Image (cartoon, rainbow, N blue to C red; front, side):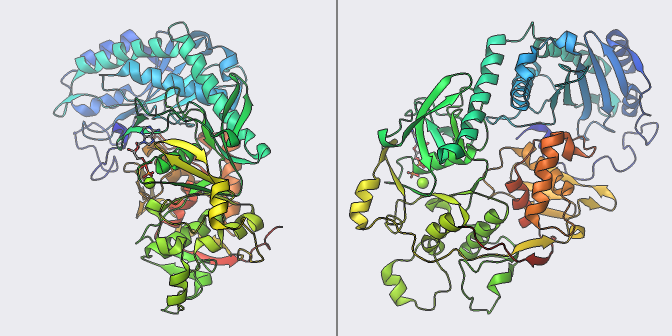
Length: 593
Ligand code: ADP
Ligand code: MG
């Protein structure tokens, strides 16, 4: 967990300063430059021992050596969330080669590199920058201007807990941090002549290759790609870095494809075709690890991650059972034909879903948000929504659940939605799969032909259609980030979001990358224009706004660090927001094909 996202008990800076500060307002808007770095340093030394609130008098712009420091928001006491700083390095000083930020993908990658370099340079000190983990996301913490006069200007957002002795200013420590350590780190990490230029270039090129691979997938009829040599397992359950000594991936010859990429020339590896793909194998042979790599393949990864050339389509969505989640008027007829309680299945709501109904609802919700690939693991699935063997079909006639196994092919044929499924414990999918991948001792082979022999038939689409489902329209007033006129959007770790008066449990939303992205989900949710349109249409607008304006499009003045989320995680949060109300359904377009 990053420092800026630790849980903060109690109110933020809503009340009067508890430290006896002089005024309850932040400093007035800056007018020009307050002084240079020496001046800032001597002011801080001079404030040593003064009451904590006197820090507020430093808000504004300072002309440091080679960059501008803006003290944007000063915390009201030493225990409040860190003060917010902005550093702007002009293009001339930063000296970044235009080549490395020429496209949006390159700018995101170079920004990701610079943030990590800055984090390293600040290590050991109190100033925090939201650099992220293994995924290279579009983050609010850095902007590299791409065009106009300002092209090449770097702007970075930081958090700095201003030091105090009790409620008195620790001025000498503050001077060391702001007037010495911070400038040193900025010079070391954000000026091209000081950065590790080869590493920066390699970082940008790796991310660009990854993005190019992802973009190439649909044209090749693939839903995912795993490069030969990739290392998929992680160091541990709490350490997302590569497992040293992990067995490198090697594609079975029958599934090997070679894709061109802009920097490396070409990359070969396993292409996962559209349709139904089954991953089988004994327990502990690496099935879930492969699926997990596909889940995070919707993002680009840092060089050295092991999965930097493992990609999945942007619309690949992981679906799992999540009992006790709330469900808001989801049309689950595709999987539930009737419930003992007489609850309507075309308009299914519950405050506490079962394992199977939660998975059925999450599947429809994923389709509603525009998923074109479903990723499902037996480890996190409700068996009775996945399979029903022949004996059980005979024994239980009054089973209201239609298992996914009966829907997986119609789903592809009718809606163009592919499925990649881990299922080592049952043979039910053998005659439904277009491709069967076996994992043994972490090594992959293509056993499709052998699976056909065992099943005795080739997969057949049959006549059954995947039932149409209604698209929901939400009441915009029920999705309210404000409490008594103040916006409250705060991530509490990766899996929990405070949104207005609600606490949203996102722990089962496994493709959220980090706590900052959870904050981004909250901001995107607050940004959604839900009035009179279906959720899918509102998500389309969100995507368009972000494509145009980047992270800033959803910030709405927030000072919090955040990363841009996918539409699917935004929808997942709305679907788990207990205050959200659905006002009705749009009847669906008839399935294509
Ligand atoms: P399964 O889902 O088949 O039961 P997992 O994917 O959970 O297996 O993997 C079991 C263990 O093996 C995990 O600890 C995982 O980190 C490790 N593992 C997975 N793939 C590899 C690999 N390629 N090299 C080394 N260890 C691996
Ligand atoms: Mg597993």
